[in-house]
Structures are given as C-alpha cells and as structure tokens.
Image (tube, rainbow, N blue to C red):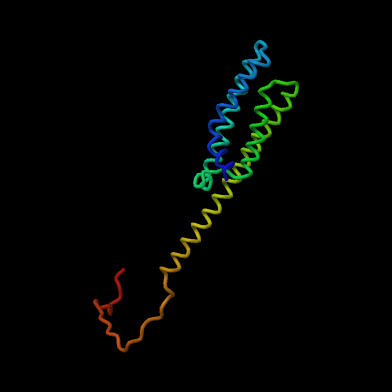
Length: 165
C-alpha cells in the first residue's frame, strides 16, 4: 500500500520533473544545435500526456478515497518513468527508448480509461440497485377493494337528458 500511495502523490510532480530531466540530460549528454526545438516540443507533449494520464487515474473515486493508485497503474507508471529517465541519458538507443515511452504512455492512457469506465459502471449499478430497493420498500402490493358492507352513492347531476351537440 505504501508503494501505491507513493505513486499517487508522485504522478503530478513527475509530469514536470521527468520532462525537465530530459532537457537537463540533453544539455549534459548531447548538446547539438537546433535539435533542441524538436526536443522542447516533444517534452511539452510528454508533459501534457503525463498530466492527462494522471488526471484519468485521479478521476477514479477509489483512487481518491484510498489515496493510492492500482497495481496496474504502478506497473505502467514504473515502466514509463524508467523509460523517460533512460531517454534523458541520450545513448544510441534513445530513439528506441523514446518509442517505447510513447507506447507506455498510450498503454497508461487506455488503461486509465478502461479502469475509469469499469469503476463507474460498478458504482452506477450499485446506485441503481439501491434505488430499486427503495422503490420496492415504498410500493406496497396492489390491494383489492375493501368490502365493509353498504356503500352510499350520491349523484350530483341529473344525467337523464342526452348531452347537447
């Protein structure tokens, strides 16, 4: 539970810190010309993607209640963060690592959507079941008319004449 809670609190700062590491790593390990412009655009897209996935994870009520992400989220976030850190070293495998990081972001995004839909579906079903139970308690079965003896019928108008057209 401690690991899941740590990832819960780490995911929003990581959306800023890890892309900043890529820029710092570029300055340290690979300072070459105009490539910085493409790198800045890529880092901005990475930041937005990480914020979007963190938002999807945070949107789940169970995550907010427990203040802990799921184990699937922990696994995918670990892979993504490891790949981003590895990209920051700018080795000959950086292109492959970057591609794998994109795949990890996409997997994390769709995992977040699927988990959000599944959790929401469970909560809606539970709420509807609760409403149906309340309706059953309130509604009583249809009762047949009481037979207590004589009934007096009072006629309020004279209906002997046919209605006018």
